[in-house]
Image: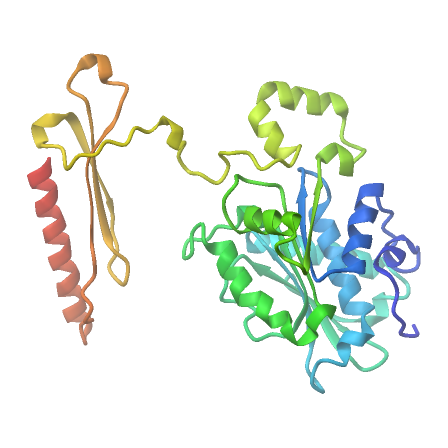
Length: 352
């Protein structure tokens, strides 16, 4: 196959290349991504084909952007990276890309190796590229030359180590890896919205308002993108849970979403700790930490008035910071942890 720059939409609709017919709204999204600017934020309803769009976008960037190959060092591999909520989800992107390539009589010979996590290509020019999958972690991909970055279902990024800050950490770690490609790089942040907080909601708002000059925001409901979804199904889903329908299928940034608790149900009082006899049915909850994080304790009870037993009272919330100086040996560190545990146990006994 002679190497030339083929358009993204053109590659999708060419039977000899991707052979992936696009729905009208999908065609608009990909055409806009190809025209620029550098960053695109897609707020799309469920079952809009976000992962497949991510797969064809990464494939196109890896195979049909010879101008980007000139910005990597000799022998260096250029990457189109898909990041998803977990490793299994990101591997779906790679698998879909692999199916497209293996069905193409022109592209299949370019595929030199394939794993669950990566498709490696060697182009006629001698350039080496790859489509790579990552879970939503800031530890992977740092320092790699990434010319295309897709963050799939970004609003739902969550990890054990970074919690609800995961999306921000991934952005901070991987977007700088696109710097060497300048305005030729492509960053797509796509998701079904999940509340009004977090990186995805922030990027969408900034791109919509023009605050980010190198970003564009796109919004479409499930019905607008995917004409195969049964209208009767959508009507039943809306009747079942109107609030969830607005977020999941209309792709609206509703007020709850990312919040673990509905804070409209909370009353905040300006007071200190509640005495042990100020409530009943006390329950202690611990958040143990034995390294660099605080050791947390919360005491929750019920009001003594039977008429108010539907309420919960936070009697105490406290955190113990770890010692600034770490023990030199394992035994010293274990002794320090034991001391912190005894202090916490003593506090629990006193307050309960």
